[in-house]
Length: 292
Image 1 (cartoon, rainbow, N blue to C red):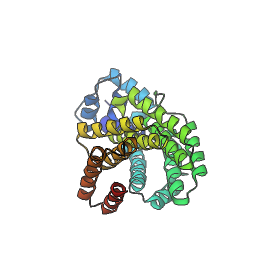
Image 2 (tube, one colour):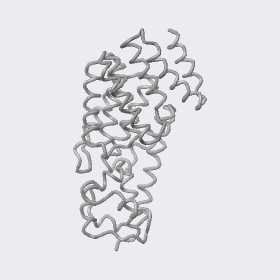
Image 3 (tube, rainbow, N blue to C red):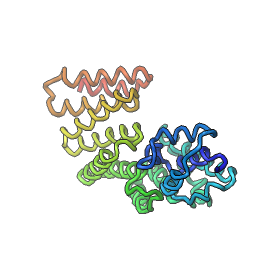
Image 4 (tube, one colour):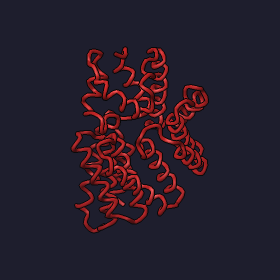
């Protein structure tokens, strides 16, 4: 029996940005992965270990390495999480500085997916800090050229990178290419819905709806908004829900500006949520839209 097997698999899984569902797909129920990672007393069937290792891109002997080696991997995971936090909070300078500080260190060069992650986060930071969309696109394309370390043909990380690329193309005014790319991401979401982080899925629905709106595809924009709203309600999470309500109001207003009650109720739903978050700047922006 491998010592600290559950902890080691947990660290590798997070290192590869895999969900439990992704790791377990076609091998065992995700609940088995949860039990294994939470309990040192849970023993995994040896028949399952080999396919799990293949999914993780490692040899089973790799799990015999000392736990200190895996602690180093865990440190990389924590740095990646910190960079993601800075980006989500729009603290792009801190995200950029953090990427520059670690991107050339050996432990960040050993895994292809970590290189991809760093290129993705660096591209986003460059886009917002320096307004250099072309440099950002170049980094995103470089990230997409990196091969995936798992057996999957299209990863969540790839979808996030493509989503970012679609947003930047939209900012550059290449609306049709941006729309086509966002539709590609939506297609893959629906191909593997059980694997997707719910918040990642909601974010992609929201951004793709905005892109569809700019491309003049209002029905598609409305459909994507509703998919995001339905997912928020089904999973009982409020992530981006206010923005989805606002986006739906914008689409409805464009489709039929004379039907004020139809779109105004979604503006009001958005305002309600942003007031709860004390986001009064966004509330003021929405009120301006309502009065326009």
